[in-house]
Image (tube, rainbow, N blue to C red; front, top):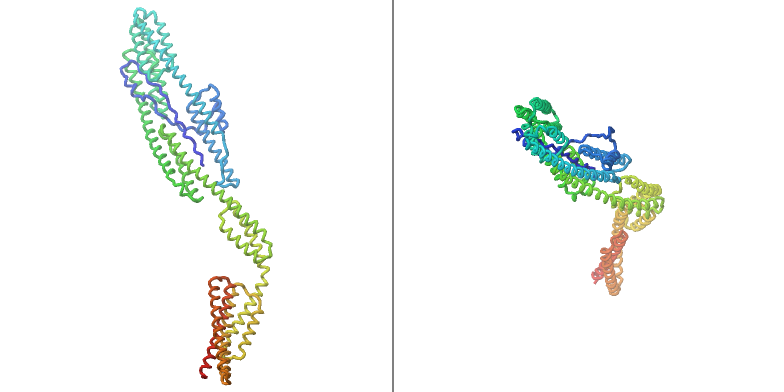
Length: 614
């Protein structure tokens, strides 16, 4: 079957939840999506690790082993790229093996992919890496929870400072140290980040509000914070022009994190600076939201297209495919659908794997049944080959035989069997037919040469017998009554002395000859009967009529009995005999019956003459 790559897993971007200050603009937090939607990015055609491009499956597997067997962390993007590159190389390797097999003289029906353990190794290493990533995720989640608890403790300490206003100035350095610790503590659970930051901002601002610092120190802090937040606003505004919305959104998350870490500005500027930063953020967030809405719609359309491809393949009635041509025709259609599938983008993440599994199952079903059909046909072709090979060996053993008739019958029977046997594998078809045909041709050419003289002689004999027939046809019985029987006996003798004629003309010539002989013998018999009846009339005049009558009556009975016996025998022969030899016997008996009937009529004529005399 044509190899189909697994769909690339879609990387999920984990956004940093937007924390807000205590400014009265809490809607900014809700303006951003709670979690970034799935984002599929097409893997690059080639990736590199440690500045060295990966060019082979072995290098891809080596990189996966390195990631799986060490503490090295890998990004989702690198894993997606490794996966895409592996399957592209895997497919290329299969296609090259297939092309090499075809170029070597093989046929598509005979091709069987070699076993390859690389894919199993690939999947095993990916499973190990996924397990490591899952463990790492658990560790990171535990760290975020611990950081959350640490930041709660810092908030409680600042609250304690606020509850003692007289001590606020004295613990200022401790307060700054707590701010430093807060900044050094990184990620906390996303769902708690916003509320935690609001609380922190509130207590920090409460601390500053109660802090008995001199105006210069307080103004200096506010000025420095304003400068930092203004720079972040400018950076956010520049991001609105970034074409790569995903990159812009991720950068914005970092800017929000930095914005939250910076201390407050003068109270009269707090809302202004936040609104400026919020305005740029809103533009980026909207573009990000619109981008994923558009992608979501496209993914739904892709799912519909892929579903239609699956339904098309599943609708093929494989039980109705009975020939190579029919199987190959559907195979071409499925190959075209596979090519079309690759041009369609990803489906929604929750359906992407499912629709691919459905597609692959439909393709696997077709190509598995196609392989089984082709294997069955190959077995049948091999059986036919063995049967025809036996006929070839038999024909080759007879090609030098000089038993012309017996060998001819055997070879004709072998040729009939050859036609009854089905086709053989294509690579043997011409070879085995040429051997069989050559053996038959060798015998029949030898037979033809041996029978060339005989054929010429038979044609000459045919002309001689045709001349006899023509001569007999020209005889008028009345013109040569006395010599007719001598002529007929001479013609019969001459006919018998002539040798064989072509087999196909034999029966036709004999039938024509027999017709003329029967015609002339009938005329001669009629003449003889008339002479005998006339002679009998003369004998009656001399006396002894009563004795003659008794003798004629007995002779009449004998003839009738003989005729009856012959007719019964003819009845049996007509029912049971279908051979040419049997037909000749029937003709001979018919001639004898005709002779007996002629004798019977002669006896009747003599009896009639006796009755006339009385």
